[in-house]
Image (tube, helix red, strand yellow):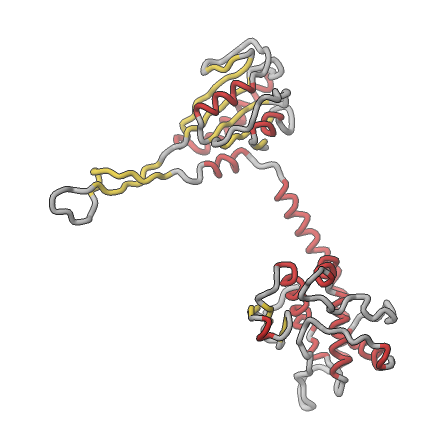
Length: 348
């Protein structure tokens, strides 16, 4: 639910209520917390969006029309979060109208015009005197010579607008679902390497570019920005569980992705398996010495460590390594035990 009305934050003492709208601007108290702000904004936008100032019946009783507008918002706009925010302990919205405030009102009455007509038929004692958290008057901005639509036209427009609420709700649910999917997706190797390479320039003091500052006796060194390629170490599994097919698959993926960075990465490749780790390719299978990777990283402290492996068990003695960005590329599985143990990430 969006409106073109600008939002202005003012102290509660100036507004006189958590929220207020003159149907041109929306004013929200600056003291509201995040949850209170959310509900108040939706409330004031609903007044503008629903056109409560234009829909007001001629010669309507101000109090009853105000209650009707509040109940329309409560029944059609408020969701569970809004109701929780209003009912929260010490909430500044406490006491506001809720969908069940008029308990004896028929369920099928939703529009403010219908609620108003129903209120006219009730005795004054049957109408609860609820303190509204909104100071909007919802007065009519029409006069008798105005070209504004008549009440019946506005009612039909309001009914059509209410029919769209379900569509808006479905759209919001779809957006939320897509956002959750993106938030929880497995990151890609490119994403993680890009993030680690974000800062790649260092400032160096050098006489190759003298300083422009005046000095009577000495030439001062100036500053030069020099790209510093990070130290990237790549660890390739050569244990018994890592078959030749897995190895071929891993190397193809790695070469394809790292080709993006060209000469900007100076990578050292290490092979581990059969109880050792070596710069030379290891053949022969054997166990998976993850503990040697942890010991190696604790000494070399590269900026990025990429480990191509599967989901072999990890020794309990291995602890997270602080400093390097540890990226695990699962091959033949969806996640690795090593990433969880070292505090790294599995990438797609």
